Image (cartoon, rainbow, N blue to C red; front, side, top):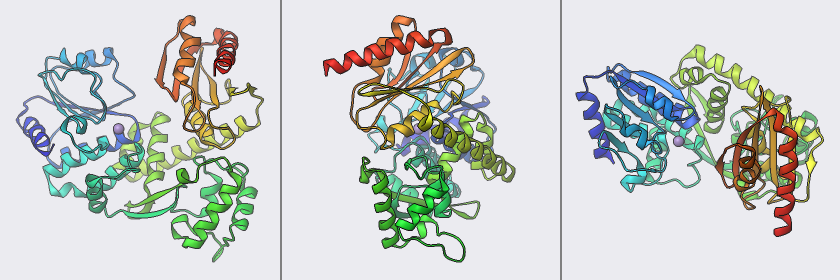
Length: 435
Ligand SMILES: [Mn+2]
C-alpha cells in the first residue's frame, strides 16, 4: 500500500491542475481532511476543501473537470459516476468497492491492498508520513479517527505504530467519557452508556458514587483515568446494578488518552465533539479545531455543549413521554420535541440502554419542516431486520429506506404520520405472530 501512496504523491506532484479535496462529514472524515490538508500545506501545495454528507450523482456531476479531484473517507461506492469525469481522481478510502475501478481513478483502499482494516484518517496519516516524517505529529488525529469509526476494538500493527507515533496512553477501564474530567460530571452527562437514574440526574450520580465508595478529594472527584483498580471495579459493579440487562464486556475496554492543545484528552470525547459540531452544521469549526485553531476550539466547545444539552433533554423527553408499546416494539413519536438531525442518535442510545430487552424494535419519529424523519433500531445485538420492516411499511407509501438490518431510516411526509404509525403497528404485530 505504501507503493500506492507514493504513486499518489507523484501524481499530485506532477499535476498542473488545481486540487480539490472532498471529505466525509463524520469524525473519521473530518480528521482525514485535517491530516491531509495539513500535509499539503507543509508540502506547499494549494488546494480547496469541501466536507459533504454523501456523494449524490448530481454533486459528482457538478465537480470541476479542470481540477485534480481527491476523495477522502468516501467515493469507493461511487466509481461509476467518477468514471464519467474527464479528469484524474485519487481516492483514499476504506469502504467497500461496489464497481470496477475506472482508468482515471487511483484507488488506495486497504480492502484492495490486502491490508489490515484501518479508518480513513489512518490511511491519510500513512500518506502524510510517507510524504514526510515531519507529519508524525498528526498521529493523534488518526487516533481520534480510529475511535470515531470504531476501529479500536481490534487493533493491528498499523494502529500499534500510530499509537506509538502519537504518544497515546492506553488504559483499560470503563468506557465512559470524558475519562479526563471529574467523574461526577462525566456520569451526569453520560449518554453512552446511558445509566438509568444517573444520566441527567446529579442526585443519582451522588448515590452511585456513594455506593461505589468513591469520595471527593480536595473538594472534587477524580477523573476516571485516575481511579485505582479497586475504585474502577467498584464503579463498574455499581453501574451494573443499575443497568442489569447490559453486557459488561461492552462497557469495558481501552481508554485512549492523547495530548491535544497541550492537554491530556480522551480520544472518544474529541471524537464526540467533532461529530457533534458536524451534525450541528459546523464542519468548518471542527476542522479548525483539529488543526489547532484556538478560536475554533472555543466555538467547537460551545457547539458541543449545545449539542449535549439537546441530547440529554431529548433522552429525558423519551423516558417521560407516552410511547406506543407493543409486545416486541416501541414507537416514540417525538414530533417537534427532538431535532431531526439527532433523532437517529437518540434511537441508537436508547437501543443500547438496558431499559429495552434484547430484540426490541425501536422506531423514533421527529419532524423536519413538512417531513418526518424516521429512525429504526434494534435493542441489543440480535433481532429482526429493521430495514425490512420499514421497507414493508414505507415502500407502498411511496418512500425509500436507507441503512442496515440493525439501523435504518427514512423520510415520510407529515400527512402520512398517522397512516405510517398504523401500518407500522400492523407489520410489527404480524411479524411477531410469524416468529
Ligand atoms: Mn471512515
